[in-house]
Length: 427
Image 1 (tube, one colour):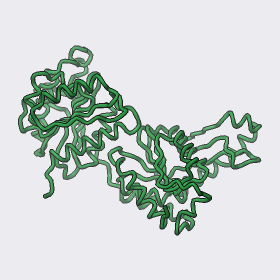
Image 2 (cartoon, rainbow, N blue to C red; image 1 turned 60 degrees about the horizontal axis):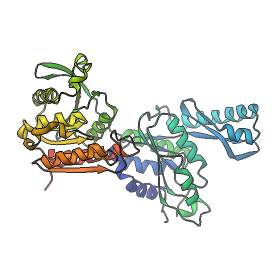
Image 3 (cartoon, rainbow, N blue to C red; image 1 turned 30 degrees about the horizontal axis):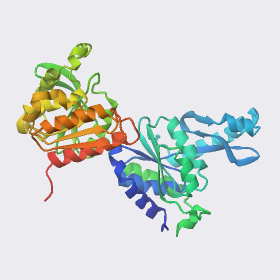
Image 4 (cartoon, rainbow, N blue to C red; image 1 turned 90 degrees about the horizontal axis):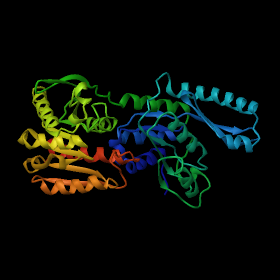
């Protein structure tokens, strides 16, 4: 595969990464040549763009052999094994690290031009370069990004030799490479135009990306009136939102659930509003019996729906997780057309029991392929539903969808279901 230039490579790479749009990713380009490629990826995914500035620490008498790497934020990764086998003294380690630290600071200041680093803690991070030869720099970047707190690290490059890709799959959670030619001598041979990327171009692209990035929608702290009970919540309504999705959390969870917040963020980027709120007061949540009282949870959800209706005039949907899914279906069974769609993530719809046939809202059941007991319960519950329904199984996922990419798949499925059923469709 031959690329015209880095813009062409970035656009083609963006197509291969389009499924990650719902994952709320951050795109990091390796300077210098990786930034023009990363710019196209970030633009296509609607993701923030930044540089990943890393410096490899090379053995003094053999610079190509790295004994570690450093990154911003004080990240320092040292391979004690290579230091020992390479007979690298402590003095050499300190000398190399000091020199590279100065260069790292210079590059970071030059490229960002005073802007803050994009936060990546708990995020899906896509590290992008214009190609890989040995893979040493890309591997160091993945290590640094992981040490900075990324939840998932994906490396994306247009071209690389097969052996380097195989090795990098052990360093990143996932590697996306468009071309892996066996006859590989240099990255530049796979580009018609592989002219050098100057510092000024990197700075300009980062500034342009920052200007184009839409301001995030800030959630509004809300006191939700759920049938006379006041509950803490967060209401987020993007401009022009065509619907609002209410979240019913599972047992032992709350509006702070990182998984539900990740899904809510994906829905917000798709132009859907969200309401995350606690179904129980702090005192009630301390009694485990309340956590599994589906009738009480459903009643709270129904009450909160009426409260929300006084604030928005768009269609409303329910997203339920675990026992919250049963509460969502129970509440939907009595809501009629008030609720336009329901999505269950790893839910226990069976706990809604006799209420299932009364649900009229189109219902999507999402279950992990390795969550076998819950999968069987969802199959049985689906047979009791009399509405439009679908069961989606995420391969390899367990109950909490903690596997790489699993929650991204949940978010994409939920987004598409709510968009289809809650927002007006163009003819």
